[in-house]
Amino acid sequence: MSTISVEVNGERHTAEVEDRTLLVHFLRDHLRLTGTHIGCDTSQCGACVVHLNGKAVKSCTMFAVQADGDSILTIEGLSRDGKLHPVQAAFQEHHGLQCGFCTPGMIMTAVDLLARHAQPDEALIRRELEGNFCRCTGYLNIIKAIQAASRAV
Amino acid sequence: MYPASFRYLRPATLGEAGQLFNSASDARYVAGGQSLIPAMKQRLASPSELIDISRIPALSFIRRDGDLLAIGAGTRHADVAASAEVEGAIPALATLAGLIGDPAVRHRGTLGGSIANNDPAADYPAAVLALDAVVTTNRRNIPADLFFTGMFETALEPGEIVTQVAFRLPRRAAYMKFPNPASRYAMPGVFVAEHAHGIRVAVTGAASCVYRASELESALAERLMPETLDTVTVAAEEFTSDLFASAEYRAHLVKVMAQRAVTSMLSSRHG
Ligand SMILES: Cc1cc2nc3c(=O)[nH]c(=O)nc-3n(C[C@H](O)[C@H](O)[C@H](O)COP(=O)(O)OP(=O)(O)OC[C@H]3O[C@@H](n4cnc5c(N)ncnc54)[C@H](O)[C@@H]3O)c2cc1C
Ligand code: FES
Ligand code: FES
Image 1: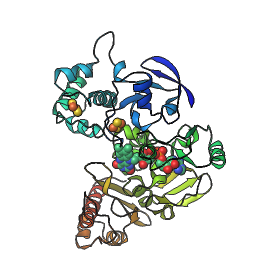
Image 2: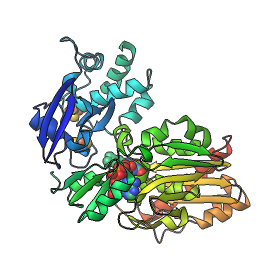
Image 3: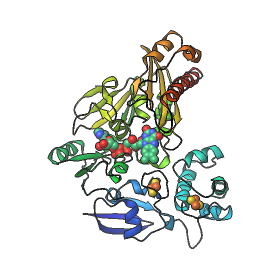
Image 4: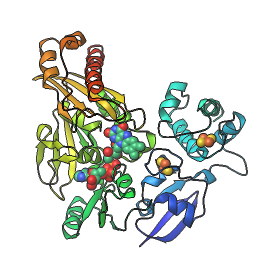
């Protein structure tokens, strides 16, 4: 067991965790932030993407103890003053989701990509979504939403 | 799935990391965790101690030194891909780093972890071989030609830590990768580099371990043109066959990727 202190969505949490606790399990089971999903066992699907110190990472592929002292942003921390983040609003507006399972990871990846590329074209968005699987939408509306958000951000 | 239990240790220095390894019973180092943690979740690896070397500052740097580009083992793929220093010295290396996995993997995964792991389809090993690099550890220097010894096997001894890789600046170089449609690993990837002392061609994702393709090297040494390879046969005997590609198809792809790499390097200023 280790004692860790992490900032999640602006709030500091100090907790006792088993060393083998994955960050995603810490977020979901300890903090009850269940917006971050688990879609695979192989680090491939991206449903678990959160930001670690401002960068998109797969929270199923690191241990909570590794984030000790770090700052984490999850899908729950995106909206401001009851208003959706522009990327969330664009997903809603452009039907960038159907079942919604992949959506938290997609949006966290999209926010990260827009921070690095202000005006991404379709090819770049497709490349950047390499690690996020969607089994419903066929990606088309996800791409439209991200492009619309890039104009809105 | 949960990995088996282990004790997590976070040393502040290389020396401390080595001491922790020596006093542990069955330790593994973890850097980016992008290969080791998936393996632990599948219980293909169950170390009793996990020594996290990713916070050791001395392992993270990018430094140009004459005709060498030294990159710290702890440098993340995303930082290599975005580095102006790398882009200026060996653009093909920046390109390669940007083709690894996906953005989230590149934010965590490291150069040292990739070459220590030596996955038969990993990208960096091809660059290390073709760029005639020297791998430095906490104990010694290992030339690229002696580093990769087999499938997931390297010259590293137990407890040895890769600290940096010094890549030799080529006159020109290019990396071409045919990504596996599911995993995005190389299937295959070919790195061609023209150095003052000759051409080096490294192939990953075809056989059980990265290797130098001598038949391609000698053909290209005579005439550095994509057409030179038209008549060269890439032998498929040692190649992997799996549900994604037969050995023969991989052999075909090695030639096509090599030709594309040559085309690309001829059209670029250098590297
Ligand atoms: C979805 C996905 C897609 C991927 N796609 C690709 C791809 O297209 N191409 C590709 O090349 N790779 C790919 N990878 C692998 C990725 O590049 C890994 O980051 C890399 O192989 C391992 O680096 P790491 O820092 O994460 O190492 P870790 O997982 O932390 O460690 C791997 C091994 O190296 C050892 N090790 C780590 N650092 C050192 C060191 N400095 N000295 C000695 N031993 C050390 C560890 O003990 C362990 O045995 C992918 C991974 C994932 C999850
Ligand atoms: S749950 Fe993390 S990548 Fe699938
Ligand atoms: S909306 Fe269902 S998986 Fe993407």
